[in-house]
Length: 250
Length: 309
Image (cartoon, rainbow over all chains, first blue to last red; front, side, top):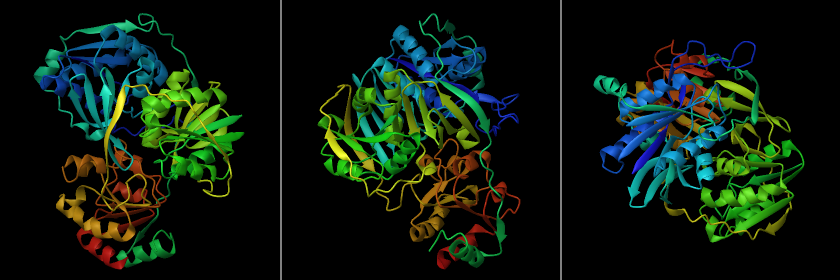
């Protein structure tokens, strides 16, 4: 079984991102970039499926400028067999990413596509579901457990208030949530080996997709600042403030 | 202008998040209709008809929609969307699962988790886990939008008298089935829905000490969370994590115990109405966002707090 896993290059989660002073966009000059945490979990899951003998090949794909090859190399170092970069300039909307991934799905015919549930930059949480609709595949979003069983997969999903398990016909889509696994660290030998693994580059034209734009970002701004409050002397004063000033406890 | 709101419900009752979605839809202008897609869901439909500001309720009552599988419900919503300018839902796990499929079927973008309606086509939404607020304008004739429920004051659940209309369309994609559900057995509210959250950090020192939070959580009907540091240290499971890569919460009261206040944690809780920090390090960054800071050893402060409330 072939597994396709999508990865995105994003700002490292430890970086505090700020709006530029003129409000035109976020300031991403010289910030550390990394593989999106949820995508890292997706790669780990795909590699574990291979180690368990369920998957035979893991193909990592990223939609982005040339720099995203760095994150594809990370995926290869974590255990993916080969990589595909779909070259686009600038940022593209989730719907376009889903269309490009659909093109890759048609070329590669994977039985399972694993994506992160959302990227920590745009926070859209859309691409996996959109890919599901475009390819008419079933989806197990926000997965905390994935069990392949013959020609179907059982996915346990994190839903509001608990867990839900669905059975999906293969080929299917899975999007990862935090509890699915704990990604490994790439070892130095594996990082060296990853440099020699194949990495193909495709364009939107190759996949027959027109890059469209549906949403314009007019401006960005920092969120309303929180005022630092006061220091209380002791627990008694704290409880008194909560009861009588903030009125949040009875 | 007209908007279709996809109801959040469990067939028997309408979930409160729907009231916030209706509030957002009302701000977009025009008629607001609500779709209840489920099985044996007439009680939820009747509740939707009573919601203030709703002029019509569509009910798709069929076994295919019983568990609101995204593959089936998205086909129904995409079909019904033909008659509307906007499709809106509260950003619950069910709607986050379904609505992007609807958008893709309609070949339009989805605008996720809006915090405000600026005009008919312009909205504010948080990006980078709320560190930045973006104002975005949609050029799609038909808009698919999820709404951050904590950002819109719920409309009244009573007072409306909308007509209820049955929808006959049955869409069963036949590619997914419901196997089972494990809804949390805890008596405590869910982290993202709780009005009070108490979280522990690395300062808790080990998982056993998280029990110190239990008594306070019981008294305040609070959910218990944790910082990433506490999760990474193995004190508690991942699903308790509040932060940029964990759960985003905005309760009435957030109590951070032994949490230094790393950026990644602040991103997950700084929209809380009142923040309390208890930490023995008076220079901890958490105090910069706390309304009430208590510089104290948590091992003495927690039992005192439990006794005092």
